[in-house]
Structures are given as structure tokens and as C-alpha cells.
Length: 187
Image 1 (tube, rainbow, N blue to C red):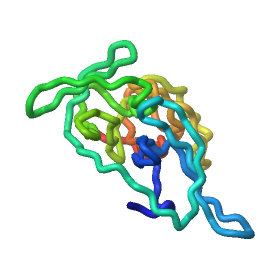
Image 2 (cartoon, one colour):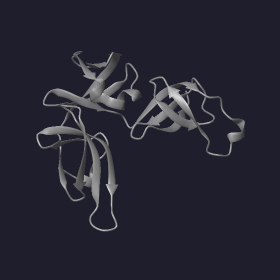
Image 3 (cartoon, rainbow, N blue to C red):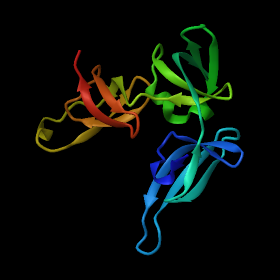
């Protein structure tokens, strides 16, 4: 059990008889009354997204998950294939189950796959990933002092605002929690 104010994006909770992944959350404290957590939850069985409000002092049943390190192999259509690095067994997860998480994965990367009662329910992204920039506008020499940003497309298709000095072919580090640029990675 965890307190409602500790909910974060990606957590899997039990609500009734179903499992839900926290897609988005917001801690609201109105002028009058008590604070609450407004959440968007995705049902892992049906894929439906619901809005749910928890009081700040509510206790929530966080699902107990088994995690196994697996290698992301490839994608085909809406299926994404992962291999257990110990037994070499392969599983596939659908795009509906993984959502935007696939924009942070490159083939042959090692990732934690979450299981509940022996069934895969999602992946646990690392806090940061390094991705190569494949398309961006040229830098602006006049933007040396200001905090000017430009869009950059990475090798996985993720578009991230980056500083003007980032060029095509460079590798950048991205925060997977909010999808923001952290720094340029030097070889």
C-alpha cells in the first residue's frame, strides 16, 4: 500500500479487480477543502483510460510485479519482441500495452519487463536513455546567449526540443520521465 500523493507515472495499481497503469497525475490543493490526486489510469486488460480522483490521504494497493531483464529485439507491425537473456525465451508486447515507451528503446537494449501472475504487463524504462539525432535544423549563431531551442528527431522517432548547438549525428541524453533533453553525450 502506498499513499496517493506518492503515485507517479508508470506505477501499476490495483483498483477493484483490475490492474491500472498511471498515465498522468496531478496533485491539486484547492483553496478550500482537502488536497487530492487527479489521475488518468489505463486499464491493462481492456486498454480503456479513465479519470480517477484519490484523496491525498487515501492508501492505494500497488500491484506486486516480478521484473525480468530482457533484451529488446525488434518490432513488427504492432508487436514488439523481447528475449529473456537467461533462457532465450521470446515474448511479444503490443503497442497498446507499451504506449509511448517504445520511443525510448533501440534494438539490442536491455530493459526490465514487468510481469504480474506470469503475464507481461509492461516495461520499466531506465531514468535516462541516449539516442542519436537523425534530423534537426542547423544551429543559429545569434542564439548563443538566449535559451533558444529547436526540435530534433531521434533514431526512434521521438521529437525533443534541444539547444541550438545540437547537430545531426550527435547523441543526446533524454529523461524518460518527462521526455526532455538533459545533455549532449560525448564519445
